[in-house]
Image 1 (cartoon, helix red, strand yellow):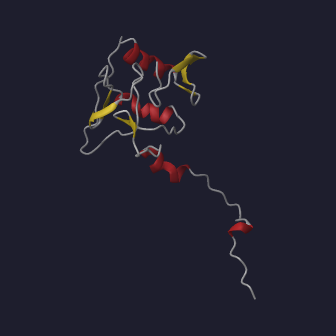
Image 2 (cartoon, one colour):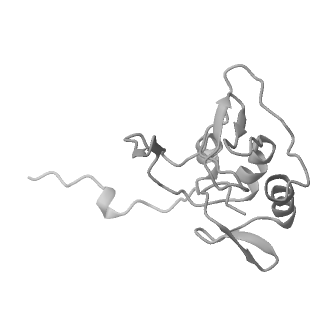
Length: 151
């Protein structure tokens, strides 16, 4: 099985699948659902798609069964180009419950590296960043003070 966030092979570790690139374990529930939907084919993933006007999922996603980059051919539905399975019903849980380090990889378009690169932050992280910052009340150090006026 492959990591749906980076495409690396997941290793079975302590009873679940773990992305060794970032030591991101999948919950047992998530691992079993992804395995049954994308690897064994014993279950069909929900053919869910966001239908709100102008909404796109975005980000880079990889098929857990094929390991290839998935594409959002229709806004709101992210499908594997090989097996045609849709991962959208798993994306919220993957974003919120399975943190993965920001990975910067070259984006390949027709086999060539694109000059456009993703910043590696999703919209939820950007919107919630102001609430997640730790607030401190330490006084500023001397490096932040204005330089004395020469007399």
